[in-house]
Image 1: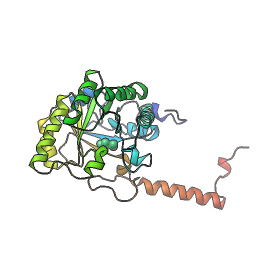
Image 2: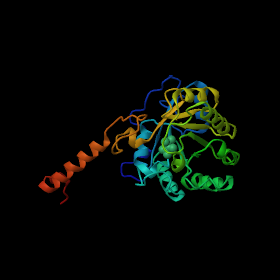
Image 3: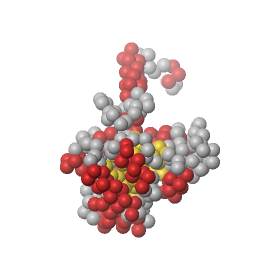
Image 4: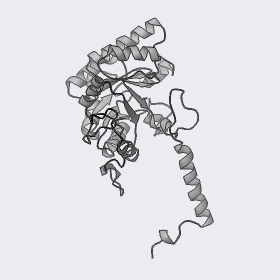
Length: 296
Ligand code: KIV
């Protein structure tokens, strides 16, 4: 990251402590090298739970990297949370490539996973490979994520065979919002069986992890027990291997109501608004700038 603060190059100011004391932990471990998908696999074997946050810019990503967040998702939620679109559907591969590269530049430890945007992989495996290759080569991400279980099996397979680690995403898949709406998925026996088949399809295709979005907690727990790859839950209860939140929800930047499954750990909207109002007040009243801010 190009910044006068040099934040990206700095070691975490207060490295979190390892949960298991082994030093290998994804969160709180001693290693400062970049986390790989092999570390993610090892965490499942150890039974370690881990956090993932979205990030869309270098500065925010550097904050999360310093906080020890081991995996960051440059999610296509950038559509709603960063680019001002109503959904994730309009996000383009060009937009993803620019923001993913920024997040990579802003971090030095986290594994960076970038979403393949809607329309960049649905045509088939070759299109998926072309899009994913761009994100790996130009943006420098360590893995990509794409939506769909059985329906995306061939795309995942070709990417993995080509050396690109893939995170799957099943349950609610926001790129299909026009067909699916925003509803809990996997309710009822038939839908639950389909979700289990989708999870297995993602694993069999070679994905290193799978996001379960908006799925009943009991079903997410069953999927987690039945897979050897980690599950990453969002609105999927407490028994997945990892949890992901959209950072603007987590930090209280998102305006209005946030979904029930999310948790707000700060109120940055209030804090930033207060800072902006105080600055504006000081400008109009002539209290800023003072002598210490002035060159002679
Ligand atoms: O785009 C995104 O932020 C996501 C998460 C909700 C998993 O896909």
